[in-house]
Image 1 (cartoon, one colour):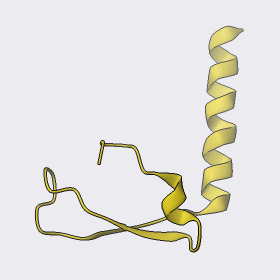
Image 2 (cartoon, helix red, strand yellow; image 1 turned 90 degrees about the vertical axis):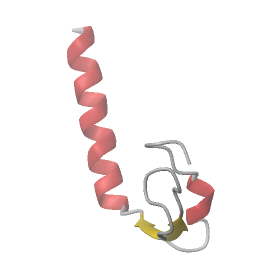
Image 3 (cartoon, one colour; image 1 turned 30 degrees about the vertical axis):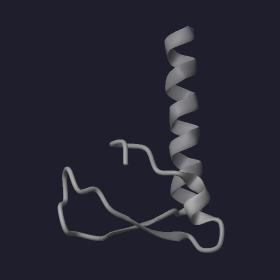
Length: 55
Protein backbone atom coordinates (compact mmCIF):
# COMPACT_ATOMS: atom_id res chain seq x y z
CA UNK A 1 0.00 0.00 0.00
CA UNK A 2 1.27 3.45 -0.85
CA UNK A 3 0.96 5.86 2.06
CA UNK A 4 -2.13 8.01 1.69
CA UNK A 5 -3.60 5.98 -1.17
CA UNK A 6 -6.44 3.51 -0.76
CA UNK A 7 -8.05 1.81 -3.71
CA UNK A 8 -11.66 3.02 -3.62
CA UNK A 9 -12.92 -0.22 -5.20
CA UNK A 10 -12.34 -1.78 -1.78
CA UNK A 11 -15.49 0.09 -0.73
CA UNK A 12 -17.72 -1.26 -3.53
CA UNK A 13 -19.86 -3.52 -1.33
CA UNK A 14 -19.50 -1.86 2.08
CA UNK A 15 -18.07 1.36 3.41
CA UNK A 16 -15.44 -0.69 5.26
CA UNK A 17 -12.23 -2.27 4.05
CA UNK A 18 -9.41 -4.22 5.62
CA UNK A 19 -5.89 -3.30 4.55
CA UNK A 20 -2.39 -4.27 5.62
CA UNK A 21 0.83 -2.28 5.58
CA UNK A 22 3.75 -4.51 6.56
CA UNK A 23 6.23 -1.64 6.32
CA UNK A 24 4.52 0.63 8.84
CA UNK A 25 2.25 -1.79 10.78
CA UNK A 26 3.80 -5.26 10.53
CA UNK A 27 1.46 -8.09 11.47
CA UNK A 28 -1.55 -5.79 11.93
CA UNK A 29 -4.85 -5.55 10.09
CA UNK A 30 -6.15 -2.03 9.57
CA UNK A 31 -9.84 -1.35 9.14
CA UNK A 32 -10.73 1.79 7.22
CA UNK A 33 -14.12 3.32 6.57
CA UNK A 34 -15.38 5.85 4.08
CA UNK A 35 -17.77 8.44 5.42
CA UNK A 36 -19.62 10.22 2.62
CA UNK A 37 -20.30 13.38 4.64
CA UNK A 38 -16.64 13.72 5.56
CA UNK A 39 -15.55 12.99 1.99
CA UNK A 40 -17.90 15.69 0.69
CA UNK A 41 -16.64 18.22 3.24
CA UNK A 42 -13.01 17.48 2.40
CA UNK A 43 -13.70 17.81 -1.32
CA UNK A 44 -15.43 21.16 -0.74
CA UNK A 45 -12.55 22.40 1.40
CA UNK A 46 -9.96 21.21 -1.14
CA UNK A 47 -11.81 23.04 -3.93
CA UNK A 48 -12.06 26.16 -1.78
CA UNK A 49 -8.30 26.11 -1.10
CA UNK A 50 -7.46 25.54 -4.77
CA UNK A 51 -9.70 28.42 -5.80
CA UNK A 52 -8.02 30.68 -3.24
CA UNK A 53 -4.59 29.95 -4.72
CA UNK A 54 -5.78 30.91 -8.21
CA UNK A 55 -7.43 34.16 -7.20
